[in-house]
Amino acid sequence: NNKKVKRKTILGLEKNYFYLAFVFVLLVIGTLVFNNYQENRSQDFEQKNRQTEFHNLQMEQQQNEVDEKKMQTIIQEKIEKEKIASERKEAINNRLLEIKKIIDATNTILENNKIKLADAEGFKLLRSINEKNEQISRIQNEIKLNQNEIKKLKNEADTLYLELENID
Image 1 (cartoon, one colour):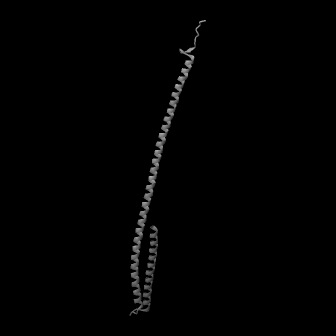
Image 2 (spheres, helix red, strand yellow):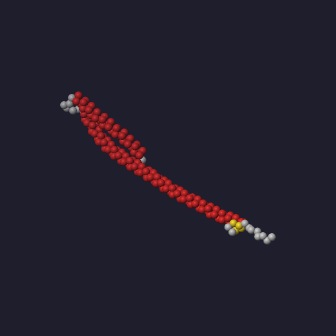
Image 3 (cartoon, one colour):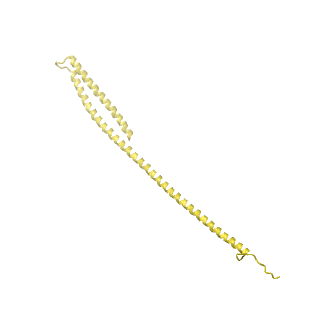
């Protein structure tokens, strides 16, 4: 009865050890594959993250450029408005000076016409009543024209003063 019990072996290893080694090799291979998969996912994630960060930086830079252009436009518009207001003020002030000179000159003419009227109303030799009345009428018309011109200029000056106040 000394029969040798032949044990079953695979590749020279007992079945139990072979299966144990096989499972161990499978675990090692599985672990390596899983780690490689995780590493690839991690690299993909980092790549996408870098791309997103780069895109975000570009968007932020573009937004900053847009904001800066808006600010430059606002500043330019403000400068232009101030320039226009300054030019308008200068034009109004020049016109007001011109109006003052015209009023002064017209007042002088008015005073001279009043003197002429007083003189025309007086007695003069060699002048008919018709000539006297015609001369008085003509001088009175000139006086009315002078007064109307002064009134018109004062109204224009008042309007310009109001506009000047609104510019400030």
